[in-house]
Each structure stands twice: as C-alpha cells, then as structure tokens.
Length: 334
Image (spheres, helix red, strand yellow):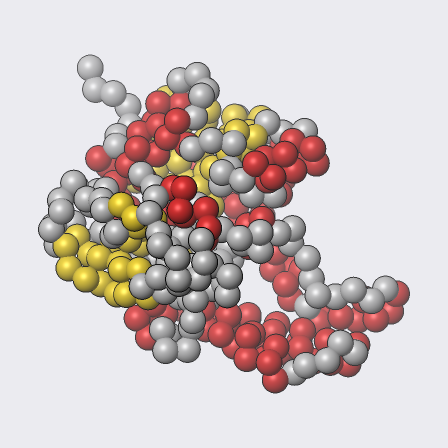
C-alpha cells in the first residue's frame, strides 16, 4: 500500500451510545510519519453523547500500516546523550528528562498503590516495552502484560520474565475474577471497541477491582489552539477515539464501574506546547558537539518545565492535555 493507495475503510456507530447521528469535527491526514499512507481522515462528534471518534476508519488489517517500526511505544527509551565520562555527566546534569521519567514512573506506581493498598495482580494493556510492569513486579506485585505488537510481547518476556499476551483486550483468554487492577497507559484511545474493553475488564477483575485509564483530553486547550503549529495534535488514525472526562465517566458507569477519581495533571504525557518548543529547538540548535548538545538539552529542559507548569495550571480547569480516570468495579446489588 503506497502513500496514496486505497484503504480498507469501515463505518462505525458511536461506541458510547450506539447513535449514528454525528457532525464533522475535523479532517486531517496522518502527519506524524512520512512513510504512512496519505488519506484525509475524518473525526466526527456524536450529536447525542459528544464522543469524538474516527469515522470511517481503517480496518484492523489496514490500520497496521499506520504503526511503523518507529512508532514511539515500540522504541526503547533513550537519550541523545552518548558521550562517556565527564561529558556524559555534564549533559545528564542539564537533562531534566532523566529526572522526569523517574518521577513519571513513580507517579504511576503511587497512583495504583493509593487506591489498592496491598500488592495484588495487575494487567497492563498496551504494555509496550514493559518498564511499568517491571517496576510493579519489583514492588511485590504479580504482573502480566498485553500488547498488539508481537515484538514487544517477546521483549517483555525475554527482558523481565513477565507473561505478555499478544491479543486484543476484548478477547483476552484469562479466567474471570483473576486481576485486582487493569491499567491503560495511553492505550484506550487505540482500542477499536472501548466499551467492549471495559466489559472485558469487568469480567477479569475481582471484586472491588480497579481500572486505571490515561487518555488525551478532548477538552484540552492545546487541541483547540495549537493545531496551526502542531503537525499532529490529534494523532489520526492511531487515536480512534478522543475522550472528554465526562464521556469517559459515562462509559465506565455504563459498563459497571464507579468513578473514584479523575486526575487532570500528569507527568506521563508532555504538554504539546513543550513538544512544539522542543522541535523548534532541535531545528535551531544543530550539531553533535558536546557544547551543542548541552545547549539543546538545557533549552529542552526549560521548555519541558514550562510545559509541565502550563499543564498543571490548565489541569485546575480540566483543560490539560491528558487526564487519568480511576474506576472501581461496582458491587452487584442483591
């Protein structure tokens, strides 16, 4: 399939309420990768419940063309810093990304522990390279992963000795009532059937089990105002759905979960203002010398810190780039 090749498209109804009444929200090609097929995708907004979704969308077979090997979740995290000795220590000192990545991981771990006091059994959906699973395993949890990438599943098994299912969460082949927590760290928006995924989670969760979901915020100000400078703010067609907190709460409630918390600021995503600034910095400050890298890393650090501050402020109004919602499996009434 070439850049202008035909796609196998499918039309879908609203996954939240089943309505087929919608209005056009935005049209955009995939701007993230130069090698993916060019097609003017359409996001629509349900006129009944306001869920934003891709319609029509590529079939699962066609969608694989939009996940090239360079897709971010499939690459091990690494800094551009390569010199050894003093040069590496100097650059590391100026590189906030090291500190931030550790804090982001601790945020995930502590969030789960806050609502599940004792270690239990956890499934991470869209586990990618498995760093979160490894960290939870070190904390005394029994963990398993799930990812649509066979390469990532094999990596998780090989590197950490953790079971990883290469299948869709809706069809996961595990016994009912077998997990205490299921996490979706920036993966629910990629799932073709979110309601079905939540239904499957309810089945495999034990009594009072938790689902933790991080997704981009459809109510974010960046999506509204940064499209002129941000070439890929909405990441079509990989993001099949764009959730607002209100829509996500309704989805959880419809599938038998009670919402226990919504977190509007997280370090597990970068404010798009910072992303745009960092891209500009990379263009302006070129070169591979230690001096050039030090300037570039320092400027990126300032931009990222500013982005985190913006995110924290916008989070006060529910308008940050990403949010996390925690749902608890509701007790069946007798």
